[in-house]
Image (cartoon, rainbow, N blue to C red; front, side):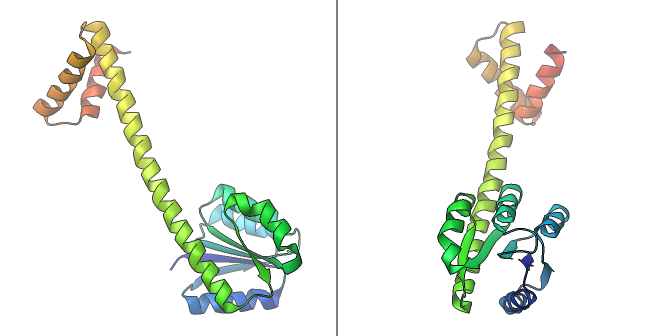
Length: 189
């Protein structure tokens, strides 16, 4: 199962959350009481779930949740007093942090964990898709540069240059990217 980080200024709450996560299937958990220690842990380890029980020993906790949201793909749950819920939600809502008021019940925590895991899973899928698209865009740019080189040096039209690259890829059983790289190594310094 994925790693979980519990950040809580209260040892009792930290233990309760850890027991709940253990029954939920999280066996690899780390706990800390301060935001600065949590930041250090986040820089050296990747966590799937971070639960912050505010306030912490050295800060409130919403700053930590924003930092984690900006720098990692971890799902984040921030626990705070009921009278602070709306203010805290306004501060961290745009960062995808799930805010739950205390006192809370096990059902609410369970539902929040499920929701955060589902959102994280979807976000990771979108990141993978985005990476694939960026690779494809880079390949298209490379092929277009090769077409421009063919048009400039061999005086081909754009459709002729496109056809040349396609034919070379088929004839040599290589990718259009490989053909484009060969063309660019021939015509560009």
